[in-house]
Image (tube, rainbow over all chains, first blue to last red):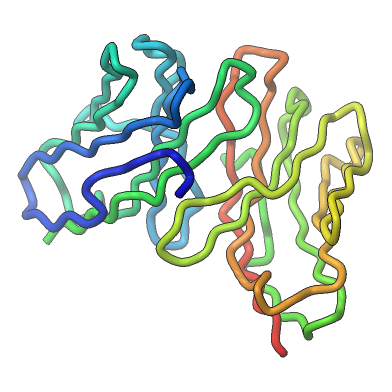
Amino acid sequence: DSGVTQTPKHLITATGQRVTLRCSPRSGDLSVYWYQQSLDQGLQFLIQYYNGEERAKGNILERFSAQQFPDLHSELNLSSLELGDSALYFCASSGDRGIGYTFGSGTRLTVV
Amino acid sequence: DQQVKQNSPSLSVQEGRISILNCDYTNSMFDYFLWYKKYPAEGPTFLISISSIKDKNEDGRFTVFLNKSAKHLSLHIVPSQPGDSAVYFCAASDYGGSQGNLIFGKGTKLSVKP
């Protein structure tokens, strides 16, 4: 157990739907990062939050949004889902020093 | 445009031999490099890192070499063990700059055969 908890582990949904992925960071970590891993792709950085505020944005689609709550857990919202959104979505957290992440085990999203 | 490239999607090595995984980067502002290992159905786990002020960092069987002039780093695993079979991701960041997030390569799948 890495200390980073992601739920659900698997999600199957239809095109056009909306889903929410949840992440609880490791205790004490203020930063949360979201990454997408599609087939044959590396880990694509989506977005980072630090202590409730958006810190950096990567290749995140406008249909996707995220937030970090006061208890530091984070949610990634994916809407108007398309087949191409099927992927593994990883959450990671880091402490103030920010060097190196601890990853969760991911949520596998399948859009049918 | 990929800033971190792992050009070998896969590598097969005999148990006991050396595994060498390579990574190239294009952004000269990167000042910190990390290697992560990923088993199926698990998230990536941190393996070893190196700062740009060093050219080598060793941790047990794992050694990372950094060649800044060539913008190249490599991970050496000696001796390789079947349990090392996993996908290895190279990652980079410019922690001294504005980009604190990690940029990952596409990964290299290592298979260590008994």
